[in-house]
Image (tube, rainbow, N blue to C red; front, side):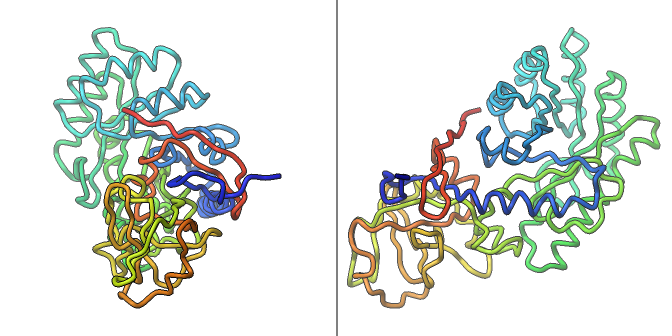
Length: 376
């Protein structure tokens, strides 16, 4: 007899396998017109080799956000790894140890100072490390502008040490998109900026074979990848309410949820109290600035279908408060103490980070349990 969600201790992180597979297939279909463009999924959301193998059944390149993740995935057979956070000098010995074990490690940086530090490390006998210069195409976070003088200064330092691999950008501002036209525009801004930066390096006489772009919105809505050699994305595997608010997916595409138990009611306030607070959901309120504020998450039944306009309106450490979005009255008898609900998260990365494992399901049937790896 198979195990049912009603038997799981709560709160628990639930992964809907059918939705995961549909999301993976969608990305595959999106990128199919560009067979020469490599796909490098970002594992910062998944943090799980079982998910990685689902995304890359034949193996392949991955991106990670911590060196612990790099070591973990390398230990499970993934040896082409992009460390996608700006590298600092203190990280170099650990990266070198991983490279010395046979990993192909690529790092990113955006300053002359760090380029000089890395090249000094290599000159002192460090193993070969490929470097991509991080490009800022939309003012989102870090990186150098495609037309900045610093780009060529960094390129000169890296090229002199044989470490220059190309350029990388992340269209983080695509999360601000609110229309199909916005999504297409952000994807083109990302592509054109990265290609411009690579062409400037090549015009200066340096090889820049890699042009790496990526975010879930731009990867799924790119219309042109001319000049791009690699696409990256991560949250697309799971999707979340922020992505739904951007227009990338619908709530029915979200593969991740938190199973919670009803532990009480506040009838005078039309509140349902559950055992999943911000320790289970995270503090992320990423939909707060979107057209539809989903509170701490959208409430679903045990099968994962949204229930009316119920959201988690507030959260304490281990208590979640569920109510109608507009404050309408509820039939609390429909949610007796001990009943179960599933909450779709605002931010899959943040909610996932609160948990050590996935309970993998199809509908309400438990198929497996997959461990998530955490740490820096």
